[in-house]
Length: 169
Ligand code: FES
Image (cartoon, helix red, strand yellow):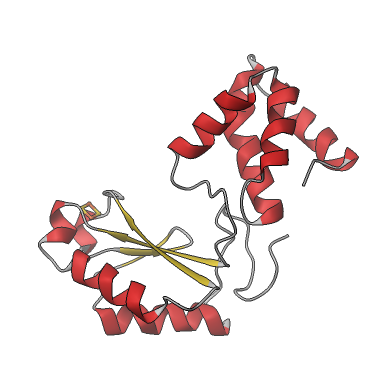
């Protein structure tokens, strides 16, 4: 979806904060993701036009950062670290068990990630970038189910507060 007039004005305010308009690229990608739950192709074109960049550069940036999603993924992004500290503490088995558990759940997206700088919590899981660890597979499912039920408050994947199960603002 393209930016509305209101969103375009908000985007221009964000751009005005920076000495170089290109610096607003990441905040604008977050803004677009907050609206739709992922960054649409139309939003990338709008951002490119607004910043005077090529669509390819915007796509390249969007695809480089794993926190930006380019397709609908549901309300909960579960990220499991499998780098060294988490690797030796059960990270790979954790991600495998969660992938199996939530394979058919459109609301939960399980992904494997590199070190998230919380090695003392290994194995670490993030739910919409909130840290949980160390967690067993059972504890991880319990946490995820609490987000799904609304007992725990999740944020959108860009950081805005929202109750799991409700639509992103
Ligand atoms: S190795 Fe998993 S958080 Fe650092």
